[in-house]
Image (cartoon, rainbow, N blue to C red; front, side, top):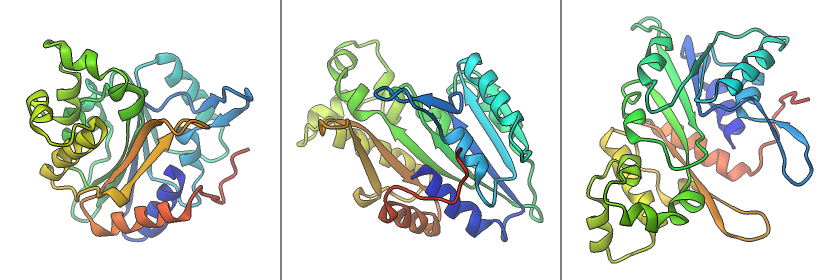
Length: 255
């Protein structure tokens, strides 16, 4: 789905925008090993470089220097060359570095961006998204609402010093709001609060039909939810088309 949306984004916007930037937050090493088969597959940080119409700028961020080094080496041997910046560090801390790596723009040289946020846990602070929201930037965010939030809710709720949930959804009073809510479903609560925070930044609401839930294979247990945000209805149109298309079969050479 990430690949499909990136394809829509660059194919439709390349003729209108001289600069298209891609941000991969929690980018990883570009390849991953499947648990059951041990097969090595390319992840989004590599596949996004193989678009028929590539972005003009790529920025990858990961806290693991080994991932950054591996990704750098894998990109270096691709047949096509790209303008790429690698930023090692915690996404929540390095927003100033990301902004420095972003292309400069002007009225005559516009910039449109797409940011994929792919954490392994609910350790993203909303302030990181806020720090980039003044750009013309679409966000595709993986929210670890099942694997982390629902699993560890009691720990986060009962520890008065824990700000993990508050930082995640930009809601310091989340405990009181959850207690006052008629619906105690923590996943729906978190989706609503995160959506409200994005709307306050000027983004269009990610209504339920624009969310994509991922469950553990063979169990039906919720792992995470993909949510998409754009300030432009055209972005939402592309995302709706992405969701309708199912698993993307893009003309990308992933061998």
